[in-house]
Image (tube, rainbow, N blue to C red; front, side, top):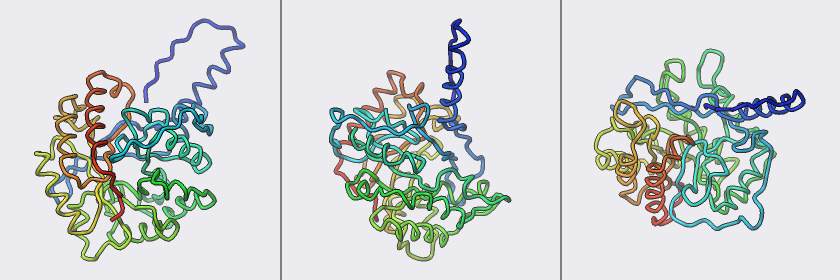
Length: 332
């Protein structure tokens, strides 16, 4: 994340707190905000788009402190399906964005959930946090480490936010099929089911989802009893959006899986460039052309990109489409 800080001459007394505040801002942000797409290609022919899921403490709150939205700011959820981005700050929920994927430390979870709800929003939660929490020293995926990371939330009672729909789903992990993430191995289908089972044992009514394409998840010879949903992130190289959706919806339906969709807005254009406003509108509309998706969450929040007037207009256009859809659960 890039910061431009302009310092003016101050007395020595003011320099120390200013420097401390800068350190806190940097600490609160994802240190790897850019995507580094893997050059490898899975067996189904779909390009792997890496999504880092580093922990975040707070968003606009530089010190990561808890907060609650004031009563007068409370608004109701506007309807439709959740629409937003990965790692989207709580303070950005509002007229354009009403959904996000978020990693929030346990001690800040309830205050952020309260604020998200007060702003009329919903969220997909990543309870396990950054992948470094569940890679062993050799780089292998560790189920026991993953469970231990999820167990950090044992003492946090957020059941009311599951019940009222503020929490869309539990995001189990990113790219189990990407061997470069897991020391040359894939995370097995049976392991994914065990992760989903473990989540359901603690939170029976919270949907479970994983960022893997239905075309890959369809390779499981068994039935998904605990995994509720798959996730597709569209990029230009995937070709025709309608064909892309048709294939993935067919595979998801065959396995009884719900589907979250989104765009790789920062690296998903031709030559892995940022998507233009017209591409965002066109390709996003294609993802929303059917009633199957239960949420639309794109990679990823970037204030500079999203503040461009043409991109803002494109995002508002897609939000209106998502809002006009019937609300849909991400449970299978």
